[in-house]
Length: 360
Image 1 (cartoon, rainbow, N blue to C red):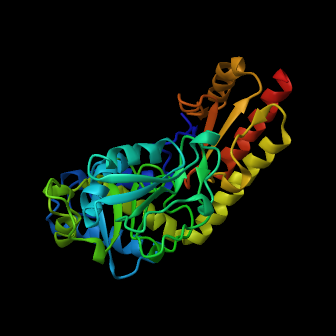
Image 2 (image 1 turned 45 degrees about the vertical axis):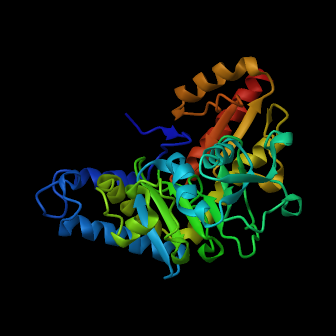
């Protein structure tokens, strides 16, 4: 059976070359006589895999030497608790900017560990735009300012970096890490579940500045203490070894294909094809303010909601799956992460045009 165009918001499509390499190495990794799944995380084979993955990530993102890279478990939802456990104790307070469901979840979780100030929110506009920084009411005594750089459900994305002064900026980049160039030095901490652009579910990347380590609350489990994990090179407990291996293959794939500059050009080109069609159509509608539109997740609605099921059924028949929008907003959503080829977006637009002609 041919591979489909998988528009899933995550776990998402992976580069075919990576999947083929993993398949080739499944039973015998580079002459070791064993699968990566079977390796001890303290053996020289896996230590080498881990070191190469970290080195490649550092190279691709230009991570400064005074930042630690941690490979952790728990996903971004886990980090919603782990971040305040490690950082909020510096002052007991934190600022959160709400731009959608995921940043709302982050703020809700953080309230368990300290005082949360909602510095700005786009909720009044149904999260279809990111509040301009002039609207933000930041607490100068906050331990950090938290944002979600890309909201997968609503399809809004920061195309600018907030200025938070001396207060560290923390970003959940789960759904747009590796999709474009990032100035890591402008952030105190970046975290990302891997299952959108970097690999399979199971591993979470944390990039944290050295001076933010050592502030964990007493209730913080040792496995989630950034300082302990940094001191143990992410090996304080058994890490998600196979997920790290696949992430390393994806990182190498990105490097071989031009790095983040090429990925950004690729993603902008795909998004333009889809947004240009949506803007020219009276049958489909994208609700997001143009300057805040996501390059990763494109929600859209049909003119008549009663046609949704027919649209999805027709798309599946043409080899395009996972286009149903999140249950909280309805409609459709096309997630077009790094591994989605231009041909996938072109096929989607061709189908949308055909469907519009049939039902307009």
